[in-house]
Length: 101
Image (cartoon, rainbow, N blue to C red):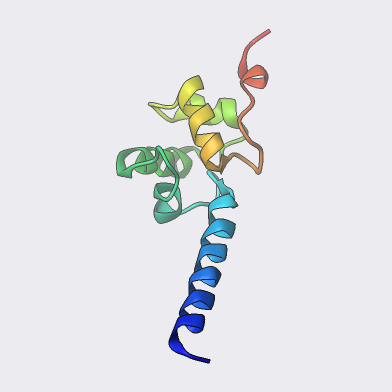
């Protein structure tokens, strides 16, 4: 096999690997700093805030608990982070579930 077919196969495998990785979710209760920062919308300050809140108060029970304990995350930001792959206890953000009735 010459260079070009090998290069094409390698490029296809890399693209497939990235697609699989980008579709994965990152749980706020298990993620480390690097995993959190991989998510669109999470920079070092927000990753630190999530980790500090988790360290001080234990695992997040659900999204409302995360919103109450992590400064800077409210409804719109929670939707954005959830769309980027952040979960809490494996669950995506549901605004209706966090609104008091």
